Length: 467
Image (cartoon, rainbow, N blue to C red; front, side, top):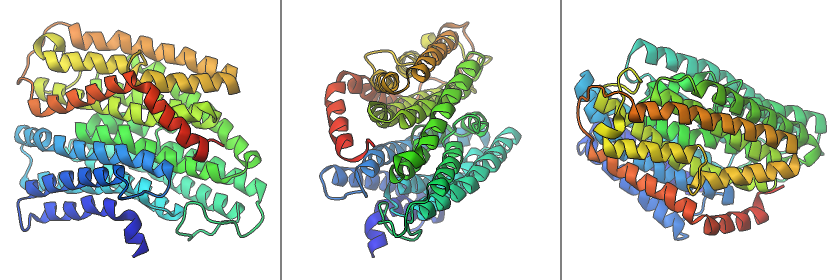
């Protein structure tokens, strides 16, 4: 009963997914809307204090996971129906997509709700399996190859993460089976074992989060997955894996965690370098945003590694990146439906032919590169400000690499917006435009209302998160 009391919000999409697959006692599409509305109702109950995830860090992650997961499922209805019509999907494949997406959403929520480290690891692995199958859902050769690469790389990372988790908990003298994220130590701290465990955890969970040099699965998987899957995977799931790692880092004393923090800074800088170098040569819009996700996971890793004010910025960046990247992947999905693809060979002149989609693409691109007054500017500013106070040389390198990423996106996106006119298969679908408008309002309003959000974050962090 205690387990159910902790994780029941994650069971809603899992049970609804089973009903969607069976289609009983109502049509599967009815169960989709039941699931979406139930998830948002849970979010409202949590906001009103009727349900408390296990700790402030879990609450901080639970809200965007619940809100954006429900939005992605709702967007999937018109998006997948159009994809299915165009590509001749069978009814069972459509139902299978929604059942798998519900399982994926359930495991993403589990990253916030499961209060046991071994169970968290199993939940992260379940998220990998569900998302791998969703990447391959089109059945193309390239999508199956992308899913296979994702499974091999992320699965290997999962094994390393498990070894790191066990070594860390054992080194700290913590019981593996305790149903708590803050169990009492039962033995003296073994510094060497704990440090090794944390390093392995950084490598393992960093692979799940798409950090370089273990990022190779991410561009292929994001570019082949349906747009709602890419949005939830990039905006929420990657950050969930990073937060599991942060939980482990918070358990360890500073000497044992020092090497892990340094490794996070190194992987964060390498992720920025890889993304900045690759984005300037991308010809597929979804692949461009996939490399952007590597960049922003690198920023979050830098915030975790720097600590202090930078950690506040990293936690805020989980929200700002999630909303902005969701907007951009939905926009790329709209482009794909309208042009029959999101590559430069198919989709140019978007602003003239699809004015709402093009305008929102420009707004999202301006936000994701960190221009004010959009929300990501403030979280990036906090990460860099904290970095300059802790490690000026690393923060200076990060700033230079961010400028490189800014130039790369500024060089590529205008080609989609203003390039020569290409044939449009169909017009804008308002079922996709309206959610993008909501997200754009959140990105803009979040930036304008930064002061209030920062005050809330600082107060919560001061009592719970900053080492």
